[in-house]
Image (cartoon, rainbow, N blue to C red; front, side):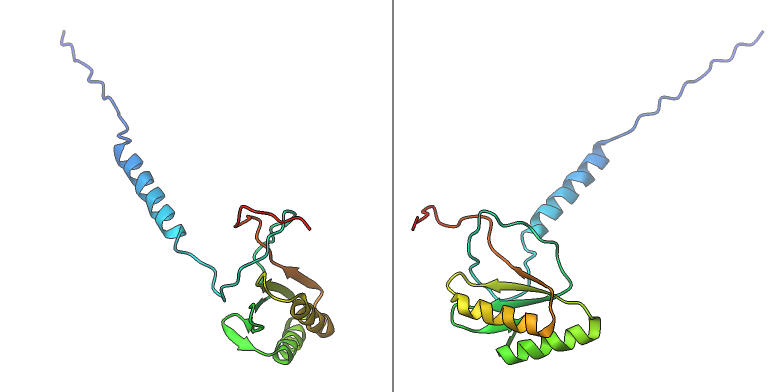
Length: 142
């Protein structure tokens, strides 16, 4: 009688290439995430402890600088142009969300003027962006 030896195959999963790829992807995303910045005008946002995050909106973002300049995106506009653009967008979409990013040195009067133009145009959702992290270590109490 002839006896046959059964060969057992041992299957091994080589995890080394998989681990290498995971680390490469992790390093790639960590390096590229630091370079992604929001497009717009650099303003120093005011600090607010009670700030709540908002989701990225499809609406318009108005930037107000400390010098009194008003920007929509990277384009400098006047307050009347802001109003006209708001009216035009409301007619197109029937709904508009406006985000205001004002420098912390911007007089409140300028912020109120933008809010007023937005309300006159029919905007119902207006957000004022603040910074949740305090940049300086001193807090002055008045």
